[in-house]
Length: 298
Ligand code: MN
Ligand code: MN
Image (tube, rainbow, N blue to C red):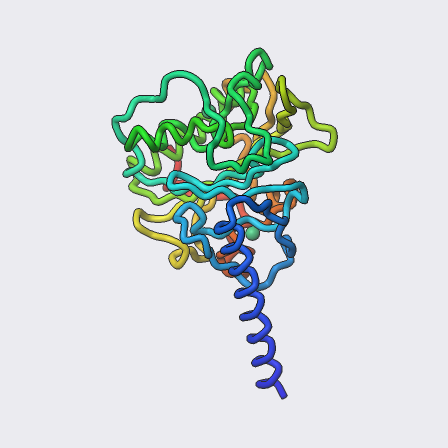
């Protein structure tokens, strides 16, 4: 019977949701465990609830992606998936609105090994980047956590870093960060940001004691909502910015919009499913188009 079928399908979805939720809960609770890569990838059919309770994972925990040993690290200031083979974050996810900007000055001195990263992982040091030719590229920008000393310091953990060429870091990447700041402060938007790197099979590495992978490209996804809005407010008309930028020299003057793409493109190139807490039908709509809203033009 159709009703019976629907019932058992609903039950199956419910079990799936509980299973995924329980897995995420376990991942967060047992801090010393390595996180097995979630399965399902882009084929998932049920939205995955954010069981971590973190505002930084409001749009869901990315699934699929790297099969290398990874660790989900959730702190007050942001959340990330750390890759124990590449010694970089797979992705960093963070909420942003005007309240995150304050008067705290940028931390002086070196980047710090992350005390929240379990001991079996290599703890990247400031010096691993020294004389490498690459900048220590913040994923969550220092300026985006200036409401307190503690918040700003948290952006200086090496788990929040990727090696970026200066021309990228101070070029189109910075311009997209500045656009996010403009949206948060001047347009009173609520942003949910996910960013990270894309790696070729034979990626470059830097580092003295251990190898830190160098991404060939960096991606960024920005869900743009009104201040105070969250997951339940995402619909098929929601603006989502997406960009993939090459990690090369010679692009210092480029605009970020030159590198605008779709979330689908980023999912294809990273193997991750992003915005997993958003219902599939809405994901389909907002991940397949480039945001072109004139209202957002700076
Ligand atoms: Mn930067
Ligand atoms: Mn998705």
